[in-house]
Image 1 (cartoon, rainbow, N blue to C red):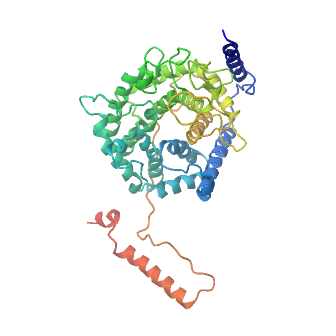
Image 2 (image 1 turned 135 degrees about the vertical axis):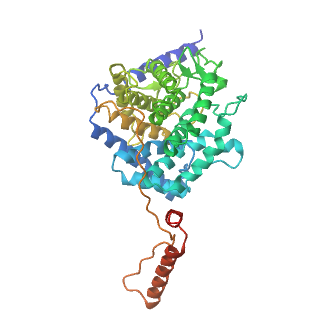
Image 3 (image 1 turned 30 degrees about the vertical axis):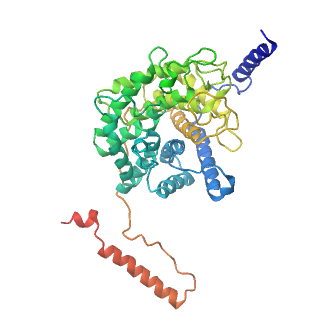
Length: 442
């Protein structure tokens, strides 16, 4: 064996041992206080919001702006839950402003292949959350239109050769949105179409021996340089976190609900075996030699899913609580001075090396989800599905003429213009047909 080969093997083993031992602080097996956990989550969310606002005001930074794609959407999946349980006005305002900025719309580019893309429908979680907060139907209409367009393709019979959701990440992006749309509207067509496509994906991508998903069909037979099956950590995280979100609003008596529960439990049991002593998982679950360094986005999703399973009676507390606490403690060792989670694998489709300084919005969203569930570990089990909040009576104004307050010492012309604008706004209110008011009176 050549010296270079011996050196490379030694370096790999040394790196693996380093990350398994000295890289992390001692694991704390005590459940953290809820307020402390929520404060950590709030700090991270606010740090991300501040960073994103800075990018918007400083184009010279040449960094990726917020948009409606899956990367941003995953962050909003977390923040939409955070604002319901914590006082974070900066995060709430950012959620609302971003959704309004994009007119509650989606990416898509017009072609059918884009219109049905699960990645572009993930932002629907934010729009649904805002609808439940405001009761305004216009918030939900663009999402509902996009989902209605997608439904026939999800359940087309006979099943076409190609999957609509051909990559395992998609099971986090669209299925929870479709499931909650049925809960919001009372129309089962969304969850029924979701259910058909979900199990088609399962049939094609699920490894019944390892109880893990291939990222897509390319990886079913592909092996690493070490001859190992390639099961991408974040890919499994997308799936188990997606199933948790599906079960959150899936009716208790839905016919295939037991299958989702069984799949969730099988996957979590398999994933749990690959947690390392520092509390984190590696980018490639079965090949630690290839990727010895920790990876936090997959770890955050696993920690969320396991804590969710404990909190809702899907997983045995005694078995999985240590896993959750180790995962949460390990993740907190990788919070950067900025307050944002580091050691994140960049966007991609398979395991690659990670660096401590690398961050991503989807990892921040997963961290928020994990923290919110960890904060509930002191509470009794909550039965599923979780009841959706009743939408409030909407507050709205007939006129879209923005206010323009008079200055301290207005001129006569300014006073006249102010009176004219107020009269115009009143005319809009008096003369405009309002379906909620005028139609109900007929």
